[in-house]
Amino acid sequence: MSQNSRAAVDAIEFAYELKALVPALNAALAEVFHPIGLSCVQADALMALEERQPVTLSGLSQHLVAESGHPSRLVSRLEAMGLVRRESSPHDGRASLLTLTAEGAEKAAAARAARAPLAQELAARHGGALRRMTAELRQLRAELDGVRALSS
Image 1 (cartoon, rainbow, N blue to C red):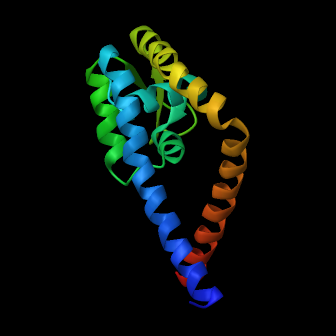
Image 2 (image 1 turned 180 degrees about the vertical axis):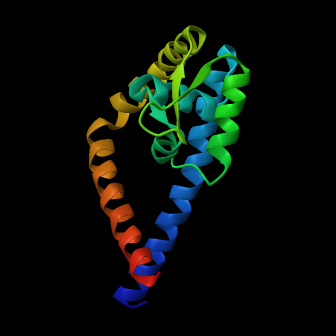
């Protein structure tokens, strides 16, 4: 096998492992969020809102890297659960600003606390490697975004 062919096989194997990692990580997180009554996506949204509020739906969507349409349904569900509040933006009448309710802030804090042991375990086992891989993945994502932009 040529060096170029081996590199292509390595790229495909990497992509497969990365795709397989997401459900494995989500399953581990689902286990820690289940006792507090949240799905992974709901917990992520609440923790993101906690850090960024007030934020528009578009701003939240960018952070969650969510598919089109999904963030709106997610926020509607969180609003129905009494965890998120929508208010009109004073700067743009068409936009809404999202904030956590008091109960939403409690759930966000509980989600962060529930996630902490898993994050600490991963950091203890793989700390330096995770930093390096994160930097590499960011670079790879930027390159792939650039390729997509060129082909559009």
